[in-house]
Amino acid sequence: MKNEIPVAIAFVAGMLMVVSLFVPHPYVAEPAAITRSWAIIITAFAYVLGVANIARISVHSVRNRSTDWEYKAALVVALFAMAGLGIAGGIRSGGAFDWAYLNMYVPMQATMFSLLAFYIASAAYRAFRARSVEATLLLVTAAVVMLGRVPVGEKIWPGLPAFTEWVMEVPNMAAKRGIMIGAALGAISTGLKMILGIERSYLGGE
Amino acid sequence: MGQDRPDRNLLVKLSRIDRRILFVIIFVCVIVPLLMEARMEMSVTAPVLGLYEAVEGLEPGSYVWLAADYDPGSMPELYPMNVALVEHLFEKDIRVISGSLWAPGPPLAQRVFEDLAPKYGKAYGKDYVNLGFKEGREAVMISVAEDLRRAFPEDYYGAPLDSIPMLEGIRNLRDLEMIVAVSAGYPGIKEWIMQIATRYETVIGGGVTAVTGPEMYPYIQSGQLVGLLAGMKGAAEYEQLVRRPGLGISGMVAQSSVHVMVVVFIVFANIVYFLEKRRAE
Image (cartoon, rainbow over all chains, first blue to last red; front, side, top):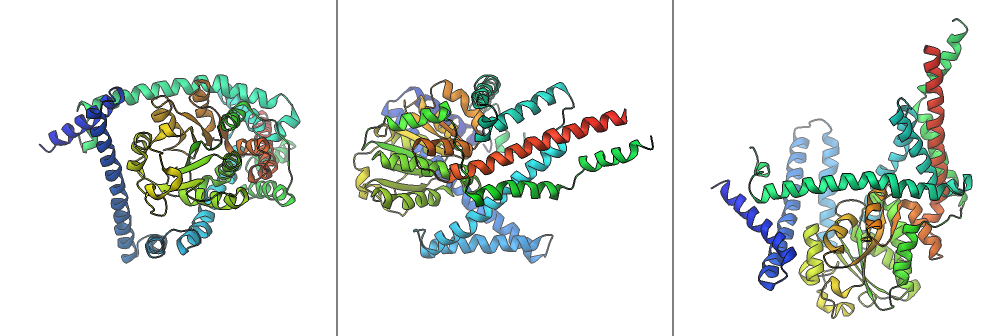
């Protein structure tokens, strides 16, 4: 029963979603809408579990003074401080939560991602070598697209933006479309296997 | 052999240059154009023009769903798009309903609204509304398409949707003219297209980060995506079209100089690589 009940739930919910795509009758549409609402609620519960889990692990780490416990202490303080600000003062613009979000979270996350520019430049210098025909093709295409995607590209050669668009619309799209069709077929196959109970790895084990 | 050694040492040094020197060069390439407030004109690409024309074709008073599916990490690319799109929508007197499938999205969308609403004389609840964040990914998309109030019973501030004047008579996506998705990844514009575009015959356009742009081209060619802004360049082109120079255009010279510098790095590093290889042979 431990396996059969989840498989049965997956079968009923999965089939309902598939059938609702083709049958708009209220007898199908309404149960499908209720199932979607359940899905939204269950997904929201994952946040509660996630917060509880990260808090438990981090507090344990701080108590035991394990490696990098200082960062985990900062995480716990920030987690509860932001939640506290939001619960106590609300999220309205100009409030404490909004201020902390815009003046602390936004610049910190933007800083993290802006570091990518430096690492990409360093990686391009150190690792991007024309070692083979394929690597040379990739290297030349990357350089052309990089220049064609910024205004300076058309100052170098007025036809560069149009050529870059051609690269995007023909060779890039052909490859992307092939990958997408392959991935979609794989997703359909996996989805069917899960709905029919053939693929059960999501239950754990097996 | 003895004469070759100093040359070879130089080549080895150049190929193993301290990365901090590269970092400083990139920093200068970014900061100098930004401080000089340098600007650069550019031509407009077809995907950007497609989105602009789709918004231009909307009737005043019609409704648009603005999906703010991004976070501060992608702000440099996506926030200028969000601003330019809302400017265009407000200018055309189009009513904007914003919702987000990314938790950090709603405050960013709200900031755009609050910055621009006074300029265009727009009021919350009458001309625009922020429905906030809802977890549930594709399930939320379908719920919005079927029954907006089931997916978002309240707005960002907890007000019931029935108490918001502009939402009177708005039941689901069929009452909206278009979805404009500004998205940084999953769930985002790709999922809006897959779940909504064909099934509900909805017009979808939007903006993505430059790295996601290539993935969207098949949807443009199939007509499931009416237009696309890819990266900061897409935002800058849109700003140019709506004649509202903003963060996108002001970042173009900095981005240009960094791209040129990265290409110079690649070319220089490869010259050093081949010289070193030839000497070794």
